[in-house]
Every structure is written in C-alpha cells, then in structure tokens.
Length: 81
Image 1: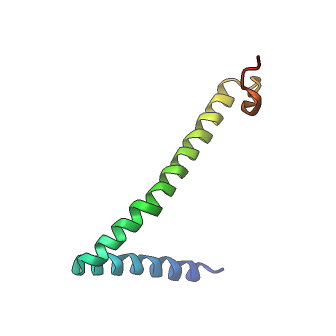
Image 2: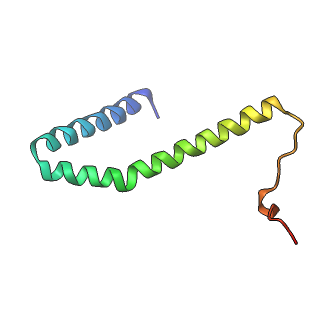
C-alpha cells in the first residue's frame, strides 16, 4: 500500500473517534453505552495485553541477566507424593 492510503486510513480512524466523542457529548445514552462497552470489553483486553507485555519484558530481562539459566517447566511442577 502506498503512503497516501495509510494517511487516508489514519485520517478516517481519527475522524471516526472525533465523531464518536462529539456525539457522546450530545447524547448521554450513547455515552453510557460507550462507557459500558469500554468497561466490559476493551479495558479487560488492554489490561491482559499489558500484563502479557510485562511478562515478556521480564522474561527478556531475566534472560539477559542470566543467559545460561534453564527455564523451569511449570506444567509439571506439582509436588508428587
């Protein structure tokens, strides 16, 4: 895709966000619906993504500090009697 196409896509997304924000300022029912969608779907997904990024970052930092340390297989880490 050309750079012009990317610019059009970004501009369309920004206009959609601005229109949604403007309409939510006028119509409180729409604002409530957007808020409930955000809290039930978007926020948990973003939080899970951030947690995953932190876990990956911690694993990379640990691997850089201890390059020859073997990772533990946590699937079979239950104590056996």
